[in-house]
Image: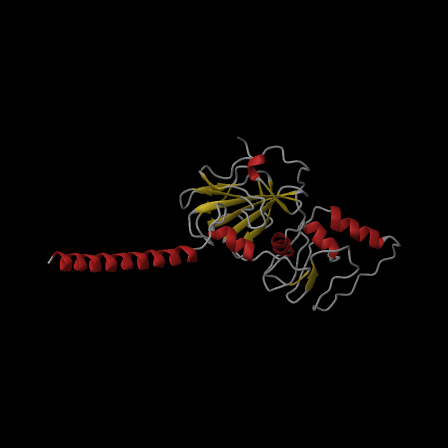
Length: 282
């Protein structure tokens, strides 16, 4: 009698043990399949990294500007213009092939018909042209929707940013990372519709949503070296070629191009990302 009871109990325990092992095996499989998430790996950051340009050459697409291509390739706009022998206001065309690295070229590779050069009696015209590309403070881009690019003079910008200020008050939810796939700025949490302000005096050189991964984006030029960017906005309140002062309300916070309401803020020095917290007041 006791023998049969013991045998039945053994069968129950064996079945229970097998079920437990199968359950643990299933959990282990799910654990191995789980994605790896880094501290700085927000959806917005990953999307922005995926659209960065690493190639030596790039074919221009409709709606792009030299600035947006420089931003994606981590290049200085002046350097990119010089490499491709582009003069202010740096007009580019869909289908045009741009060199992203290398020395200053004599001609820009393009599928667009070359325009006739104006006659010049000066022997130093080529030197004068190069000087314009490097130094003249004129608009880098004309109206993207127009075939004619007007030569709009950029107001004088100081060569040094005297004071940076926070673009919005809020908690930093993702810090800057110098890693290859790290966050190239800081992410600041807030409420939808919260006012976003310019961090320093400057000129709006980009306002749109053509850079996938940034949503509604504003980029401000502060001088020949520094740019700042404000991404994922719900509304843009400024236009390209508009001058702004530090503290000027330029946008309203949103979640375009990302999965959470926040401001992604970047500062770039000569085309390279730098840690904004080193510039912003403590």
